[in-house]
Image (tube, rainbow, N blue to C red; front, side, top):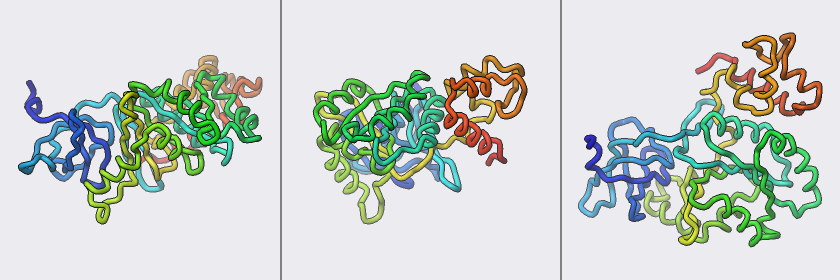
Length: 304
């Protein structure tokens, strides 16, 4: 037994700053602080903790168990980890408003880099522009990404059944910009979602701590599984990816890159480039290649 083996095991379900809510195997939730000054826990972490008061309502995190995977987000200034130990990701997009293909591509690259399966869910398929949205997603279907279609408001029961079929027994991160229907999705699948948020707000004292950060929701009792929602960020962090690694994380480019004349081809200007040849043949879409060049340029700039 390790020196942490005698400590209680818990799951990090949300947090703000240095304050975390840790859930025990019996589903009791405890406010915990990490030991020392460093705060590197994220939602989905399995941790070892010990109580610091008589009723075990507060505690200290002594150790983070080894992670299966880890995701990063980034803003203008920094990259930060935010979720761990995921079984899959759902990238929620909608017929209206028009989704950003660049954001979608970044989500797929981040998932590929972390080794996490990802599905795309297209919402609002009852709207007249649905065929246009389907056409924009066709390159992703061709590269093997599963695309599910739902109408969360117009067809709530059918949509719920479609989603539950792929959510059971999995910890699933749900992504989606404003207006895609992410809140509707969570409320359809987690009947007591607002109550879970309220409990955490009360525990963290919402007057001092915001709870608009990454949060873990359990599905209904008869539907084992969990949803993780992380609002308030626009792009995945990709700075951990090396520029030369990028094509291997984009399935359509990866296949074409195997036919390049040079092993270290950047797919930007070299002769005998399999990627640009596939682009000319229409096997890689112009939007996908444009996204590749943009991200490659970002990753090639001076890193941290």
